Image 1 (tube, rainbow, N blue to C red):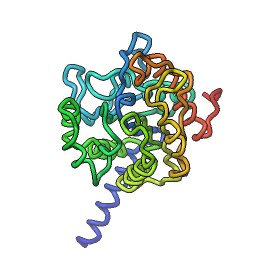
Image 2: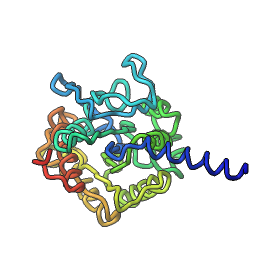
Image 3: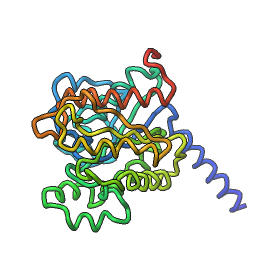
Image 4: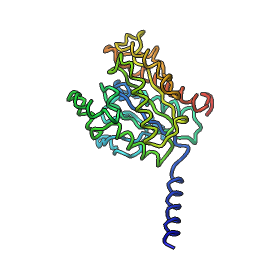
Length: 280
């Protein structure tokens, strides 16, 4: 009798969890370094609200009235409490503007300015942190010393609400010239797939190029390596940065550059999801 009772309770709990997950809530994981973090100051045009676009806060931001692990309407900053405009902003805005009205979009953004891709490697991040400068340690510590772990923790929480549909990456400036970068990214992608029990055939990785040569990008040579990513991860796509304005440091985009790049991420994701930009 007890066995039957446990079986019934287990079935009920499973049904409740399945019911609470909304298949029309599309969730995307975002990670990388400063350009994913958001370097440019956001402007009034970037703060209009659409409740269909949500962000899962990955750190506590009491001054913003946000608590880690809770969902909020996605207005910048989407990464940490004092970060700027990120490609994730206009990625989400592009999706909700073109997807059917019954579909919501959520993002989780865990990024650390200046970091190498090694910071997100489960087997190497501790060794990498030992070499990191103090100013970076302060950012890493906001994720309890493990940004990858925080991303997975938040993603697992998000899976109770919706379905993970893709992963966005913008990183490479600190790995410029590293020909092993695509393999390192594949390792992180594979870990996310395994740790979150995802199907790699249905969860693409979208990786953005760095500030282009035409815009004077100091690390533009890395784009040739980034462009090889689909040879390593079959379900991956490279987002062009051509024509996305950069600022005077030749590393970061202007606010308009982030808008253009984010829209390109969004348009690519729409095509992967088989939605035409005219479908509403």
